[in-house]
Image 1 (cartoon, one colour):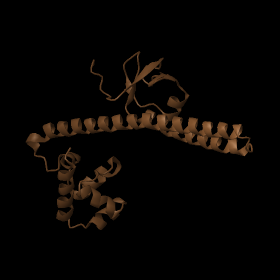
Image 2 (image 1 turned 120 degrees about the vertical axis):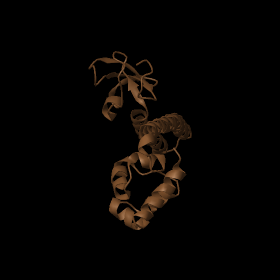
Image 3 (image 1 turned 180 degrees about the vertical axis):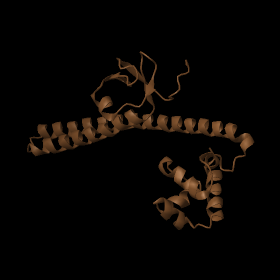
Length: 210
């Protein structure tokens, strides 16, 4: 998906509607800085306002994602290409998130052990008890916060695949946090078949075997 092309298309259609960046932003309930980022290709409109923005600019979502007005002859093909590209972008983003999860887990664990080591060193030097409690407490607090954030990434990035029926889905945060797990496999109840199984993390929601 060419963000630069999409940005130029947004700017063109905005001007065609005689709207300034500030006016478009006001109608959408966002800042004109966000509109500027779209038009320079630095980001894309959020899905929650995409339909409203397209209506204001007199275009379809498919036109927007293609960065041009799509003719009826090529509409289905262009829409399919846009959807495929969106899926690929989500998969790339999910892979980055899961890599970030590993980095967060390793970094927070190292910091925790470092704080424990500092606390133990202070104990051997016969320092006051708070000299042990403070670094250990800091280590545990940051570890809990980081693990909660990593768990959130684990929940939203990619999908879990049921071993019983093959259904792929995004579970709730509660389901992920309470489930037994080993690595990126979690023992959860499938919302489709209702059976529990060890479900593996996958990036795509499309099962190649189907």
